[in-house]
Length: 127
Image 1 (cartoon, one colour):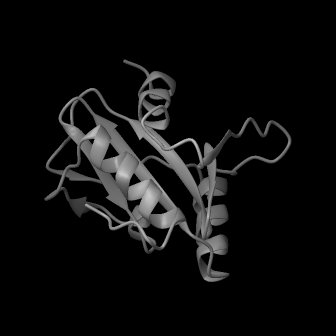
Image 2 (cartoon, helix red, strand yellow):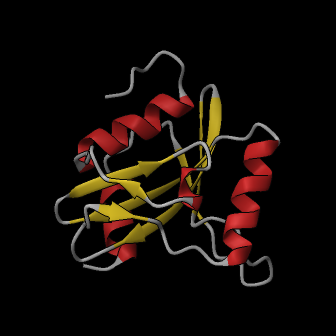
Image 3 (cartoon, one colour):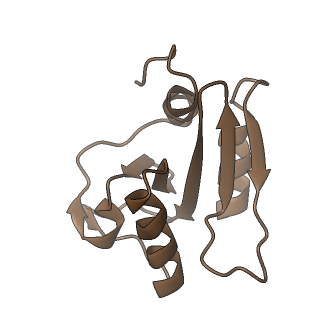
């Protein structure tokens, strides 16, 4: 499976009121893969996909991706890096994408769709 196939499978599980923009920013390097917009917020996600999830991991971000994510986070924006694998999805928030961390929690595709929805609508609870 490829990253784009994986991302598309999760995006299809989102409610129709969530707007999804698959960003193709050739002239703005560093911009995350997807922008999501919902009733009470928006979310930028950089997606990564691995054939197998390691016990410890630091997402492979370019210097521009890391700078973009950190700058938007510092502005108070809703940003995250999600790393998927056949075993599940790891969530990196609050600049955790810059450090190697132990992978203690993996989420299913449905749980990730619910997590995204919860970031965009304050009436929805995260898994």
